Image 1 (cartoon, rainbow, N blue to C red):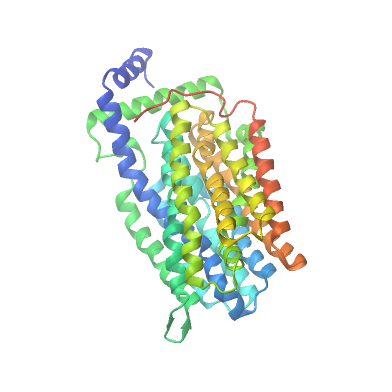
Image 2: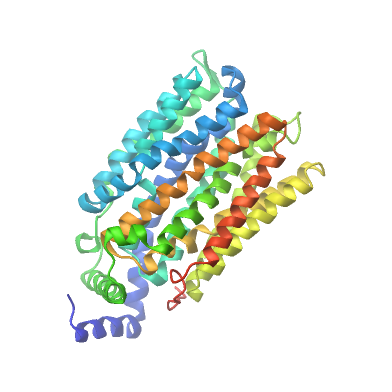
Length: 448
């Protein structure tokens, strides 16, 4: 523990020696964010490439929209089962080996999807893929919180999660291209799963040699950088502990943690309801559209989402405001989806504009939202609470796609399904407004 004099010295160093502060923060960002972002690109692609495969797979295997929606969403049931235990294990054993284990196992299971032939096999593989990947995302959020000050966290999370739209910018045209291959007598959608699973296994082998568990072990930092970062993080942690001491059980029962879980549930309903069906939605705009054309069109909303995540995350950190930034993104996502239904028959261009607005809004909320738990939680309590928020929230990843498929089969249209997602996003926005304390305190912004 630092004395008050040492704490004051740490703060003074950060103020007077701006070059040390700037240099340290930038070095941490350059070292961690690109690598973690690459891992998340691989993770997210193996999670959502089912949406591109569905353009051919559903017809080949005779899957209805309801069967596809259930299989796409059942991933999150397995994810839910292992989420909290996995994150608590990572907090105890460290990020390096646990993240490596996650990468290798999900890569192997994702590749097995190439050999499914029945709905039951499809459901089984998707379920165990969720089990394998569980705790990866909340583990990364917790890990970033152990390296970044509060004033840097929305930006760090936004930079890291900019890999999501980047994944679709790259993955959409590549995945739809692979649908057209026919190697060794195997359909293109089967090769899609095989080839896109390989990077996860490779990076799982690399990860233990690259990641550092905590700042104290960072040999890639200078001594003054390491000491400044450890002092700044320790002083910040002490403030949160003095403000309110949370046990893990208290965090699980905390009103704001429960509300954040509900917010994430409704938000993720919209996120995956749109994301896993967007290739099919775009394909439905024109019967003459090729799968490759669908891939290029689907990439467009994610290009703008990439920019939106950067700008909103940076704005949130500079102002220290979290809730309004999060609400703005969710409301924008709801408006975009609602207009896509209202103007459903206008033209392909108009529909793509509204899909783009919606995707921009949904993605822009990630940075400020995930900075909220770290505003009042610390240590293993933060790890467990973040895992709970993410695990409960990701059940929305089951509900959203399943509702879209079920409603389409029942009505012959996606419009009512999209309106259901609009309601979910508005519910998420309303709940984030009602938070009592989390995310309300402003932190000193940074121009770095």
